Length: 335
Image (cartoon, rainbow, N blue to C red; front, side, top):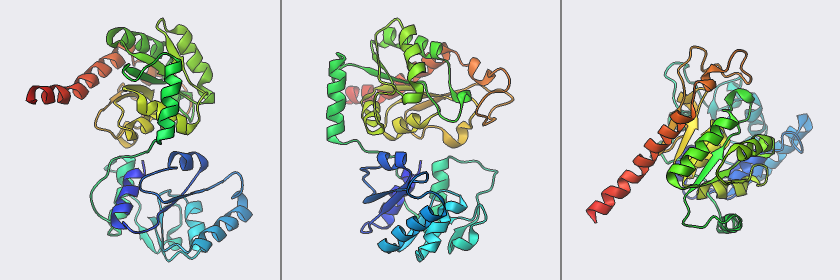
């Protein structure tokens, strides 16, 4: 969700060398990225752990003699190394008691008037005069990764002309964000029958058991890749999808950034701040009194998820497909 702000920085400083300091997972997602020249890995639990690790990070930043640091995380820990490294301009929200570490500090955003998280990052830049157009979320897949994807799908008898539906049943930060395996299976079967799509299940090692349950439950053939890809391979698989059905999760945002039409199922999380930022995306959710609670595990009956039915998700997918294909129909009539 920071990538629109990265695009703004590239527009404002077209000749600058932009370095992204990121955790290992984010670093891989952005290696490569069209708006980033270099990625430094922030190893919070390894090389940069503890006070000595932060000092090592500080030394690395000082050696590179950066002119400016833009701090998207709101934590004190994110602001300390750039301050210690004496980076001349340090931009960030004055959250978490770190105002003295920022010389271009921006007041924290008010809790009223909630906006999408990516808009908040752009607001930070707006407040210090870095204004301009709004770029979409963007991620990149290499030609080698696309070739790997094609070979993997060909071994499963999925060709380049086949319609391809991705199902992502996982979600981090607890079980409350996860819809039910048997319902994902029902959606996969219904759309495979109606659309003639081939189905792939995506996810990490933690979702392998859930994905296996979906594959067993489905009556239509499916390719289960959960736990069998790294994050770069996952990007390539998602990019190849014609449609994506997902929980509120990291892969949801990957699909949005890769311009894949998607239906996202939301339960305990706030869809107004983290919905998939894409032209062709629909959110399916139920208005219940206790949502958004932001809890990892539901303490009652999980009503925000139990009230979402497979039929509702399929209806949203059908509506989305009509939206996606409508411009093509208009083009055909024009030609």
